[in-house]
Length: 323
Image (cartoon, rainbow, N blue to C red; front, side, top):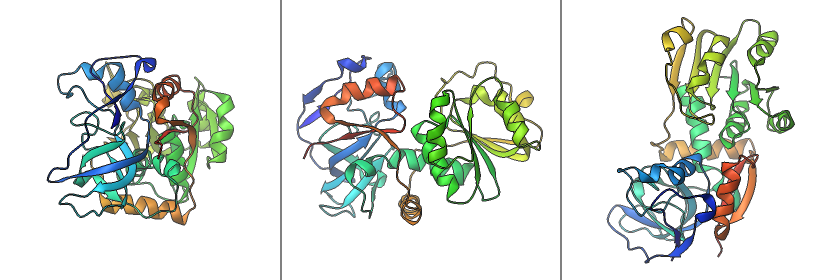
């Protein structure tokens, strides 16, 4: 079968599709015929430098999510032909992931779905919408009367978070460093779309003089110094993303967090069937269409990684597999 293998740090244009042995089923695992998958910055980090770490099995097939059909359910609850999504649980690091025609994955991180979405649309959902859902409703405990700031909103995760936040009636402020992307934020439901510059806090305070209640921080923990001062007493900031890098040197949370406010995070390694079911229920009830930035064929994986690395896609980058 065809797959991408990583053994050492490489550039995007050095990614190659190679022939690897067909996979054999084993107890507790299922074999999926991959129909598509979304790209994630975790895979960019893996390709750029993390692949050199001792805890990564090498060579490894990258990819932390996929959609497809059960090819062999083994001893699991799945039947051949079931439509499924799979994500996290060690995919693409502890064991081979989704950048391949078939993926052998632990059954506990594979979830059956019932949806009329085509494979491309479906491939834009698993990791992105699960992370947005968990950040908003588990960590931030978002409600309809909340005022939510999505900091780094034009990322695929930010766009999904805006869509989900509007389903409960929350007021949403979205930010982008580029003014030309503000229209996209308004299109997906932002009540206020603002340029993320040195005046961001002042602009939000002009609109909400008493502050806001929730912040979804996708740029990085280091930006708490700028945004946390917007929180009202009882407000919460959830750090989920690292779009601006992961540097937190010298971060003094005692000084940065206003008294009476809370800091949390969301780690997307523990999906459940119940949560996946609820995500698709929300998507169907509210007719949510995932924002897809670019679609590439599997053979274009290197080009797709270049687009991701250069932040050239406004929305999720999806890879479709040929039939």
